Length: 82
Image 1 (cartoon, rainbow, N blue to C red):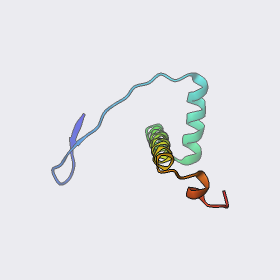
Image 2 (cartoon, one colour):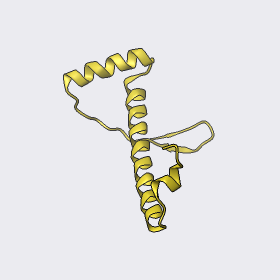
Image 3 (tube, rainbow, N blue to C red):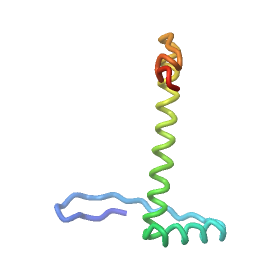
Image 4 (spheres, rainbow, N blue to C red):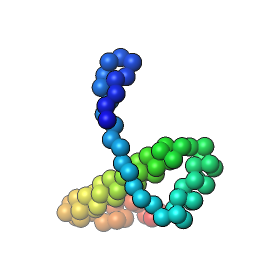
């Protein structure tokens, strides 16, 4: 789906339809109410956070490999307080 914003830039948006169990639907509705979000906003935020966590995990794994190849220990990276 595309739409034109106020300065004439095309904005591309995709639509995703998913089936969720009744229990998850009830939990989502409670979450939306408590956070004052629409279901769309809530799912977008949840997905955004999950993708960010995944990206962080991937970067941490790459950093661990780099550090290991450089001969660094966990103490070298995190310090003595870890």
